[in-house]
Amino acid sequence: MSRSFTYQALVLKTRSSGESNRDAWFLTAEEGLIRATVFGGPKSKLRAHVSPFNRGTLWIYHDPIRDSRKVSDFDVRSWRPGLRELYERTMAADALADTILASHGGGGNWEEALSLADSGLDALENADEALCIRIFIHFLWNWANILGLRPEPGRCGSCGEGFTANRAREASAHEAGPDGLSWYDQQDGIFLCSPCAGRTAGDAGGENHSAPNGGSRGLLPLNAGARRWLSTVEGLDSPQLARYSLDAASLGQARAVLTAIMAGILGKRLGTWDF
Ligand SMILES: [Zn+2]
Image (tube, rainbow, N blue to C red; front, side):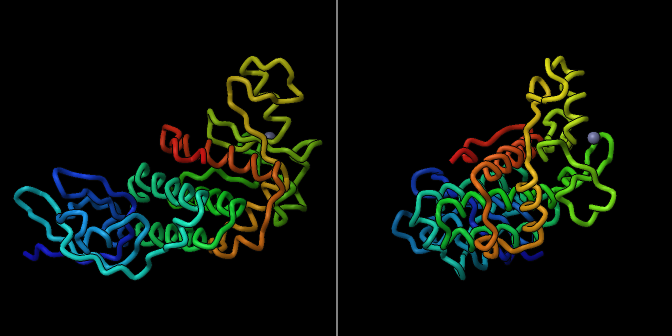
């Protein structure tokens, strides 16, 4: 049986291990997340190659008796130096890698997961501060989809009515609310129209039924602009996001809702999301 394996791999994280070695975590197209040891001191070429966000072809030696993996070589095809040139780029890249690690690499759709991660990191390389945040939100939106756990954004998860921002359903849609808001219900992980959100907040002991205030259900608003943006950018590659901007209010709402959705999926909020 062969003990050497080749992968298309992205370095997500490295950490010191022992005196001069490192542990490295990779997202691979073939097997999802892989952890392997990089042997060699600070001046080793291999160690320099196995750095976060580098992408290339990875050779791993697997010791079946100790069930340990060792990096034998890593041929870097993409170094992404731009990620280290701006604070927000580095932070967004860290947040992206952390999310992948926390969700165990994408639950089986590894090729798609790697492609989404690549697209996000490539786009971050040239992004300004505001674009970094949009790329991060876009990544979370598509990542929730890869995990198969994304809530339906175009209609109310309680009464089933479509929201107006979804043009395909416009004929049968009604206003999400007088303010055009829909709400993300963190407790049930669904989107609600304003009337249903008002009732839900009421059931949960909210004081004002017609104006959901979050309360114990953790209702987060998402305005029509943010909904429209999410439905527009969904199928785009991250580098195309530069052409689709968002006003500050919509950006803030989209970010709060998307991190809440991912926190619901992972069962925790990641510290790296708050850059
Ligand atoms: Zn409803």
